[in-house]
Image (tube, rainbow, N blue to C red; front, side, top):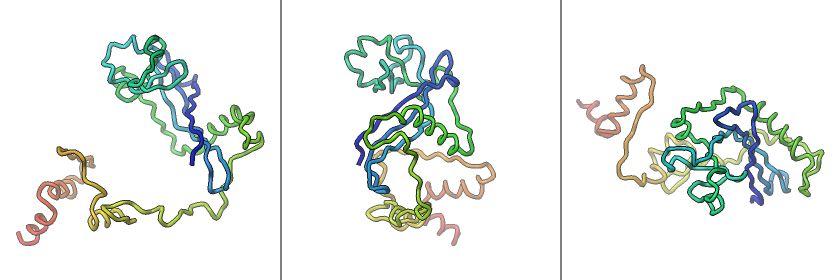
Length: 228
């Protein structure tokens, strides 16, 4: 059970540019942990977010491209702007989503780090030392370190954690279960389109066969291959 959830964004001066400001995103969540049978503070690093340095009233683009915005250090949904923000659009700055980045020609930030654990751990640890060691939260002490998982708990999950939902039952193996039980639920959309992403050498042997399964049916195709 979570008692508090907050998203914190810290300005990253090294990655910021003239047209946008880059922020490191952190999630703070206070919840009861059954692992330690006590309240715990969870800290997560959620990558970076870019915010335009121009307010939304300076952009000549359809407003449906605006999803999240920042108004006076508060993150808001553009569709739910309150009265004060609407009166001061010159102080409302759009958070740059993929669509806005493409329209404005802003490059996407791609984390190419092969082992993100060390980088993320360092960022979280620095955040903790700088902002939480003097915390007034009653269950935190300045000397508190991260909880060390006991060796016997590493790689250990409950057996039922592997369960996946198929049809009206639960199974573990998706390859077998999707054929035996069927999908969890049919698509709510009436008109569907499938597309394939594949390596060119696989086209003849695998892709065409899979396409025929979809268009002609598995049993029809195998019957004709067997008796044709």
